[in-house]
Amino acid sequence: TPDAAAAHPVLSERRGPYAFTVVSSDGWLRYCLVAPTFAFANVHSPDGSTSSGVSGSPATQGESWEVVDTGGFADPAPGTLTLATAGTFTSDGEQWSTALGRVAPDVTSVQVSLSDGTTVDATAAEGVFAAWWPGTAQPREVVGVATDGSRARAALDVDWSVVGPPAGS
Image (cartoon, rainbow, N blue to C red; front, side, top):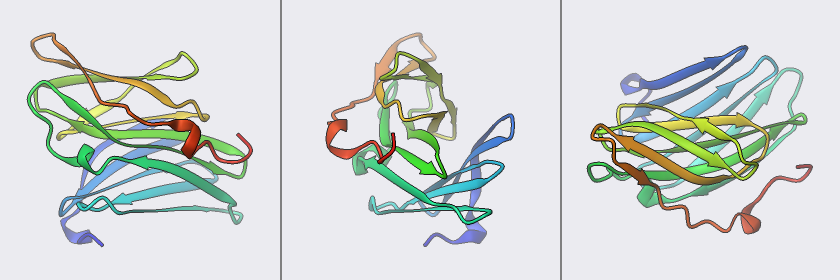
Protein backbone atom coordinates (compact mmCIF):
# COMPACT_ATOMS: atom_id res chain seq x y z
CA THR A 1 0.00 0.00 0.00
CA PRO A 2 1.13 3.59 -0.51
CA ASP A 3 2.92 5.57 2.17
CA ALA A 4 0.18 7.57 3.91
CA ALA A 5 2.68 10.22 5.06
CA ALA A 6 3.60 10.98 1.43
CA ALA A 7 -0.04 11.24 0.30
CA HIS A 8 -1.30 14.55 -1.02
CA PRO A 9 -4.65 15.64 -2.40
CA VAL A 10 -4.74 15.97 -6.19
CA LEU A 11 -8.30 17.22 -6.59
CA SER A 12 -11.50 17.46 -4.61
CA GLU A 13 -15.01 18.43 -5.54
CA ARG A 14 -18.13 18.88 -3.46
CA ARG A 15 -21.76 18.83 -4.65
CA GLY A 16 -24.30 19.25 -1.87
CA PRO A 17 -23.63 16.57 0.78
CA TYR A 18 -21.34 14.56 -1.55
CA ALA A 19 -17.56 14.96 -1.79
CA PHE A 20 -15.24 13.29 -4.33
CA THR A 21 -11.50 13.36 -3.70
CA VAL A 22 -8.41 11.97 -5.47
CA VAL A 23 -5.19 11.49 -3.49
CA SER A 24 -1.74 10.52 -4.83
CA SER A 25 1.12 8.79 -3.04
CA ASP A 26 4.20 7.05 -4.46
CA GLY A 27 2.56 6.57 -7.88
CA TRP A 28 -0.64 5.22 -6.35
CA LEU A 29 -3.97 6.97 -6.94
CA ARG A 30 -6.88 6.62 -4.58
CA TYR A 31 -10.24 8.18 -4.90
CA CYS A 32 -13.28 8.22 -2.72
CA LEU A 33 -16.85 9.43 -2.74
CA VAL A 34 -18.21 10.36 0.66
CA ALA A 35 -21.98 10.70 1.11
CA PRO A 36 -24.27 11.14 4.12
CA THR A 37 -24.82 7.37 4.49
CA PHE A 38 -21.81 5.72 2.83
CA ALA A 39 -18.23 6.11 1.64
CA PHE A 40 -16.71 4.38 -1.38
CA ALA A 41 -12.95 4.21 -1.89
CA ASN A 42 -10.81 2.77 -4.65
CA VAL A 43 -7.02 2.40 -4.79
CA HIS A 44 -4.88 1.87 -7.92
CA SER A 45 -1.22 0.86 -7.73
CA PRO A 46 1.41 1.81 -10.32
CA ASP A 47 1.27 -1.77 -11.70
CA GLY A 48 -2.48 -1.56 -12.32
CA SER A 49 -3.75 -3.62 -9.40
CA THR A 50 -6.80 -2.24 -7.66
CA SER A 51 -8.81 -2.61 -4.49
CA SER A 52 -12.02 -1.01 -3.31
CA GLY A 53 -14.34 -0.81 -0.35
CA VAL A 54 -17.70 0.54 0.68
CA SER A 55 -18.62 1.49 4.23
CA GLY A 56 -21.65 3.00 5.84
CA SER A 57 -23.79 3.41 8.87
CA PRO A 58 -25.86 1.37 9.39
CA ALA A 59 -24.00 -1.53 7.75
CA THR A 60 -23.87 -1.06 4.00
CA GLN A 61 -24.52 -3.65 1.33
CA GLY A 62 -22.44 -2.78 -1.69
CA GLU A 63 -21.06 -4.09 -4.95
CA SER A 64 -19.03 -2.61 -7.74
CA TRP A 65 -17.55 -3.25 -11.16
CA GLU A 66 -14.72 -1.47 -12.82
CA VAL A 67 -12.72 -1.41 -16.04
CA VAL A 68 -9.02 -0.62 -15.64
CA ASP A 69 -6.57 0.21 -18.43
CA THR A 70 -3.11 0.01 -16.84
CA GLY A 71 -1.67 2.04 -19.74
CA GLY A 72 -4.18 4.74 -18.89
CA PHE A 73 -2.19 5.64 -15.78
CA ALA A 74 0.94 6.52 -17.80
CA ASP A 75 1.82 10.16 -18.51
CA PRO A 76 0.00 11.19 -21.71
CA ALA A 77 1.67 12.94 -24.63
CA PRO A 78 1.14 16.71 -25.00
CA GLY A 79 -2.40 17.61 -26.00
CA THR A 80 -3.78 14.18 -25.09
CA LEU A 81 -5.53 12.36 -22.27
CA THR A 82 -6.25 8.78 -21.23
CA LEU A 83 -9.13 7.01 -19.56
CA ALA A 84 -7.52 4.84 -16.89
CA THR A 85 -10.57 3.51 -15.08
CA ALA A 86 -14.35 3.72 -15.07
CA GLY A 87 -16.87 1.92 -12.95
CA THR A 88 -20.09 1.85 -10.98
CA PHE A 89 -20.86 0.94 -7.41
CA THR A 90 -24.07 0.37 -5.53
CA SER A 91 -24.52 1.05 -1.83
CA ASP A 92 -27.90 0.29 -0.25
CA GLY A 93 -29.70 1.07 -3.47
CA GLU A 94 -27.78 4.24 -4.35
CA GLN A 95 -25.80 3.89 -7.57
CA TRP A 96 -22.84 6.06 -8.57
CA SER A 97 -20.39 5.96 -11.44
CA THR A 98 -16.88 7.35 -11.83
CA ALA A 99 -14.23 7.90 -14.49
CA LEU A 100 -10.58 8.69 -13.81
CA GLY A 101 -7.71 9.31 -16.20
CA ARG A 102 -4.58 11.28 -16.93
CA VAL A 103 -4.24 14.57 -18.80
CA ALA A 104 -1.21 16.25 -20.36
CA PRO A 105 -0.27 19.57 -18.71
CA ASP A 106 -1.69 21.53 -21.66
CA VAL A 107 -5.16 19.91 -21.44
CA THR A 108 -7.32 22.42 -19.58
CA SER A 109 -10.76 20.84 -19.52
CA VAL A 110 -12.34 17.40 -19.86
CA GLN A 111 -15.91 16.33 -20.62
CA VAL A 112 -17.31 12.80 -20.31
CA SER A 113 -20.29 11.98 -22.54
CA LEU A 114 -22.48 9.23 -21.09
CA SER A 115 -24.63 6.47 -22.56
CA ASP A 116 -27.81 8.25 -21.39
CA GLY A 117 -26.97 11.35 -23.48
CA THR A 118 -25.78 13.55 -20.61
CA THR A 119 -22.35 15.13 -20.30
CA VAL A 120 -20.29 15.47 -17.13
CA ASP A 121 -17.63 18.17 -16.75
CA ALA A 122 -14.63 16.52 -15.11
CA THR A 123 -12.33 18.18 -12.62
CA ALA A 124 -8.65 18.17 -13.65
CA ALA A 125 -5.53 18.93 -11.60
CA GLU A 126 -1.91 17.72 -11.38
CA GLY A 127 -2.21 15.59 -14.52
CA VAL A 128 -5.34 13.74 -13.36
CA PHE A 129 -9.00 14.14 -14.29
CA ALA A 130 -11.98 12.72 -12.41
CA ALA A 131 -15.70 12.69 -13.11
CA TRP A 132 -18.54 11.24 -11.05
CA TRP A 133 -22.31 11.10 -11.40
CA PRO A 134 -25.35 9.38 -9.91
CA GLY A 135 -26.61 6.27 -11.71
CA THR A 136 -25.08 3.67 -13.99
CA ALA A 137 -24.75 5.51 -17.32
CA GLN A 138 -21.45 4.47 -18.89
CA PRO A 139 -18.81 6.69 -20.52
CA ARG A 140 -19.16 6.76 -24.30
CA GLU A 141 -16.67 9.53 -25.09
CA VAL A 142 -14.02 11.41 -23.12
CA VAL A 143 -12.81 14.65 -24.72
CA GLY A 144 -10.14 17.07 -23.54
CA VAL A 145 -9.46 20.59 -24.77
CA ALA A 146 -5.85 21.82 -24.88
CA THR A 147 -4.66 25.40 -24.34
CA ASP A 148 -4.33 25.87 -28.12
CA GLY A 149 -8.01 24.92 -28.59
CA SER A 150 -7.33 21.51 -30.08
CA ARG A 151 -9.50 18.61 -28.92
CA ALA A 152 -8.32 15.13 -28.01
CA ARG A 153 -10.36 11.99 -27.37
CA ALA A 154 -9.33 9.27 -24.96
CA ALA A 155 -9.35 5.72 -26.30
CA LEU A 156 -12.49 3.98 -25.08
CA ASP A 157 -12.35 0.42 -26.35
CA VAL A 158 -14.51 -1.22 -23.71
CA ASP A 159 -17.31 -3.73 -24.24
CA TRP A 160 -19.49 -2.55 -21.35
CA SER A 161 -22.00 -5.39 -21.84
CA VAL A 162 -19.35 -7.81 -20.58
CA VAL A 163 -18.44 -5.97 -17.38
CA GLY A 164 -21.50 -4.30 -15.94
CA PRO A 165 -23.57 -2.82 -14.60
CA PRO A 166 -24.11 -4.30 -11.13
CA ALA A 167 -27.22 -6.32 -10.35
CA GLY A 168 -30.25 -4.18 -9.62
CA SER A 169 -29.30 -1.52 -12.16
